[in-house]
Image (tube, rainbow over all chains, first blue to last red):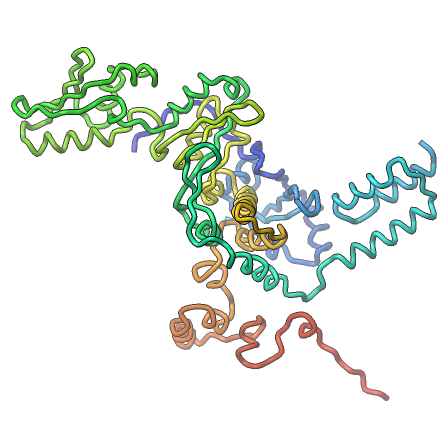
Length: 85
Length: 381
């Protein structure tokens, strides 16, 4: 396969309508979250480090991301994912 | 703002309820006078109402979801093909499509993209058409006819001027593209391209004809057709047969915030796991709705959540969720029984009997609902 011409347009997944807002939690926020739900960090749902949103949000392996979903039932729903390799 | 209003607002902000419930409450409270005492009663009832509406701890939510999706599934048509709106694009619908979605197929049978255009393009038919030509894979057979000259051992391509002009292409461009792809230079004689095979043999000649046919002269490989449709809002939207999301998003004029595909795995690769989850929900609800079936979105959300918890899109079934169960007996009860039992026997696996299936097999109460609760009686002293 030959290389396709680069149009210089970088696609940002976070700007797409189907992608909810992703943000990295600070350490304190992670601590509060884990104590609120009484779970270990490893028990959180996962997100891969190769996920386009992880790169766009500049998250690292081990970070916890808060995802603000628009939910049909709850209006706004928060979801948390831990970045794994 | 009065002190009363302020304290009421503070009470609303302090509520630990979903946004929708709070929005409803605000709507009801608007243009209505409530005292602080009434407000306290409202909050109290709201909280008990919400607690009652929540699913019971220990409830078999997965089984309820499975039944709620499975039963309407029996009423779905076994094999339907449908045309997406006015555009004559074929999409798989009905039961086959639903199976495709929960199986998280890498290549769905009818991939399709919905391409939205940026402001400057979306209301201009000519610009939309131009973009459509840029996206649709163009082969030589739509631009002209090819013939072989056996006496001269040459391939002649007669180009159709109108077709070229329509796609804004020149004969030089085509000659260049063919040379780039096949390494065969061609002579341009008016509207005719003359190609010569590397060796003057009949076989080489036929081989050349074949490979010229497969050269993509313009557009993106994998996109068989592009249909332009004017939506009710007055904007032009492109529908494609075939899906190559990543490349399409990099084209100037394509709205990279709305353009989507029906291929969930492609969405996962380009936009990530959360978008894939949303795509699963959308595709499943649309498929069911199209068949006139109403399944509560919560059931579909549960399935999509399970498919995406681990960061990639996993199928339900033997190679996915059911195949990863910890219990040997649960896996053996599902599919390929002997293999699971044999492998586990050789490895010496232990079954902890935590799940439902394995407890049913050994004849114990399952650990769900009331079976999940253990009572310890205190000895009377």
